[in-house]
Image 1: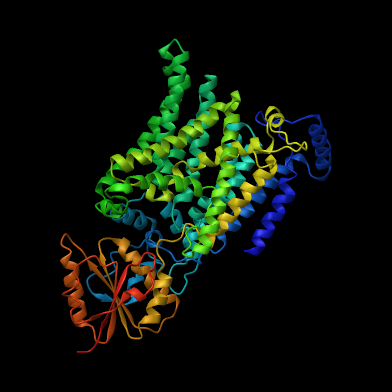
Image 2: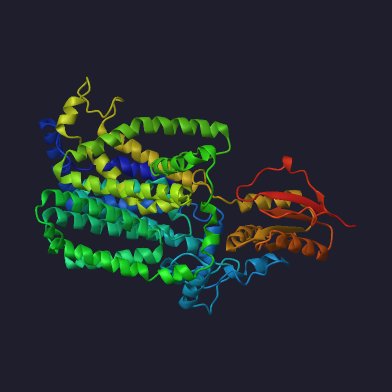
Length: 625
């Protein structure tokens, strides 16, 4: 970790300080003296490195930093239940092979994680269509990718499963550079957007999970790039090139085939296009303009995208497990709970830029981290907002700022509509914000471009007493401000990869350690079962037991819960009767009456035992009669 930090800081200072002044519309030389210095430096740089090498060299640096962060500690954190679903379905397996309502050994519970040599891509698609709520594209790619890696102790390689989204996450760095460059016709904006996403804690968080969000985010970037190109053509009243229209449809189709929430991005793009049409309607005297060649190809893109989306409707309607799998984001609002979605949405926005260890259980860590983050945002937010305001004053950049703000605001509004009107709290899943996250990154890149070389009139207004260019009231010049914001992102990324930020919901490693410390006798770990979500929770525990080579005799019970919770109680009671005593019973996330079932066992005092994330437990000692 220390090597990564020192290397990143060294190269950042050496290379970013040599970044030449841009000739982009949003970047201006401050005065003749700085222009002279720039000319002298640029001549020197031309001797050392051809100008054509500079931006690829910078991009390579961001890429190396980004991939290093995403691969560091990649397998250090235990997989959680959603990742287990990725592992199982990507192998062409399913959860139906795990027996219910009887005690089973850890190896039986872990059987779906074993590579299946006879499974095919057809099995991957079929299992997802009948048992899951996600489209198959990512899982098919993961199926092909994981075949390249050997198993680990007979189980699928966690590194194989997580390295694919890490690679897709790193690929977003050059892709967002292209988006920023195309949108603002500025390589500086593109470079700063790439630098931002390379160290963004949110991007690193998504890239270190064996899930499909980084691939979906690549399609979001591609679709937004097509939107930007279309906006330029609408502005200029010229037809959208056919290759762009076809690419847009293909990207949108692949995005929907990766994650259904990609349609939220399409919704935001529709809002932006409708707004552009309304603005042009105000300045156009002919309504027939909307049936001209300028709009006809955009209509064709919309129709093609709609067809690509309708293909998945029958699969969604056929899947009977969809409601069970999404229960966690449903809930009623009582009292102050009505404010929770707003704070959750705001927290996700903040964590896209900065996230220090405020989730720590130690107050000595939380308080200083919170103070540093608060101070940082009090200083940074006015700078970033000023950069956006200045970009809005530039005629060529105003429309692009409005487009990206429209995408972000529309997406957040849609999340709140789902939350408050449909009872589906999408703000609880930070990962869902991938639908507009690239737009935030490009807005940050555009704002930081102004910080890097502020316009002349702004610098004259804020010139320091000693003639030092400064931003805001803190006496820090624009380049240092950009460096500080980037370094805060880097430290935040380190926080994530050390599991001090965006912490895992489940900690089976800690739970297994607790079992080994408390129970000297065989154990039965029982939970109520509704779907493969609970199977994944227990798989995490079984996997940790296997990795620890624990000599302890452990069994698992998945007591399936039908409409009547008592069915789980009956399964528990029948299982307890068949097991030889003594043993310890660990009821984990067991949501059913247990008084009758465990009447022959003695309850343990759990008040002295620590809590474990994701595992609410109760311990019973079942002795011989």
